[in-house]
Length: 169
Image 1 (spheres, one colour):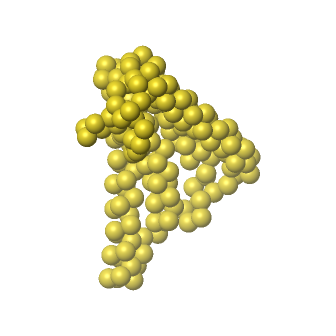
Image 2 (tube, rainbow, N blue to C red):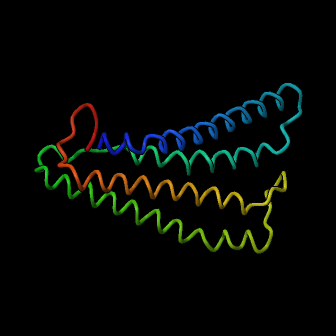
Image 3 (cartoon, helix red, strand yellow):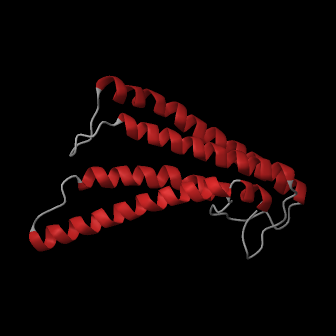
């Protein structure tokens, strides 16, 4: 798994950096909005739109690094007494299920994205067209799919061991 992560480290760092920038922008806008509203009664115009766009970016670009590096929250109820082969099967099944779930998310996002394109949907405060946001979401989904493929190949290639206090599978 470590060599798989090494090969894909640039993509992981890129997606992690984009997610971090989204989080920073979101935090700064929220703090500025609260302070300016409370002190000067002058809220930040478009704060709602900027925060929602930043949340979209942070979420869709932040999931892939977590999945690719197997940093999800794991509850190891049965991992301690299962043989390595069973742990490998569970890892492969979990990666396949994750890939299928996010593929379903992508499939279900196509119709609203097309509606945003066809009808010229815009954001509430700033009037930004929403179709580019759907493009950002699809790019993030491609990254998440890639991360599940990294997880799947790593789970299929190496025999898993029981988790310890250092981490999960």
